Image (tube, rainbow, N blue to C red; front, side, top):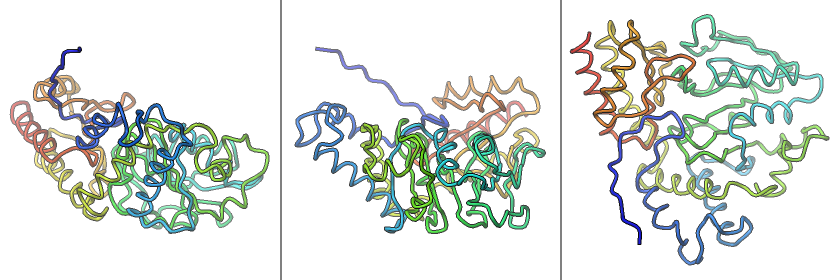
Length: 366
């Protein structure tokens, strides 16, 4: 018989894999040994069993309900994260000799554009690099190509902390919504494809949700490798290969939590706006000390990024924060500084504790 160990949970500001709702973790714990009525763990059952069929159907329906996704769209659960979608999207949606347009607003859309440009004749029609990716384009800042198959954007850049407050103007929008999926309403009908790796807001690492407009399937070029062809996954109901069953199961629990806790994406959006305002208020009041990265108009509600004039404060800030049980606040290795990721499951109490610490830190060191 093992000895139980009680561990106090910290406020985890990791950008991903990220904090999960405690009620979800508790349900996973309670059902880990044996799913109710099944007799086995979710880790042990077949992906073609009636029990998993129900999990898959319920998770799919949860997405349809929250985003009001109609039957014009397929919902897939794939592996490979956003990195695989960087290649799958152009391979499936751009016939030979044609192109797509890309808006580059940070590290992740930059990587997606590099993949597309390497595979096709696609073009970058706006690039925020000259201003260090501090903003996103507004209507009129870019000109799309009339023959482009789609316009690609990343709704929220986790590294730079910039976010589209609404979808950009363009036809056949393709969106990487990995880090703000489930955090606010999204008009799926304006998009050709929306995808999101789960480990930010929707679940654990391992599964990628892909919402795909069904009419696009007819134009997919033949000859793609089986796994890289969306039609393979549609035809097999996301079971072309063994899917990430556990990650899909947890994603379904997260969807249930969102619906039970908030009722709608409009409600959770207000909740997230209240949380991020606590941190941005401190940054604005101590603007000579905390240097926010994003322009105010385009600040992310998921990833609050800032730095100090003197880099010596980076390590001190993280060390002192950890003493307050505030963890994983380091900025991405490519940009440094501080990043607080405050996804759906981060409680208001955690954000308030961080805001209070930031105020105290500024008063002591500013």
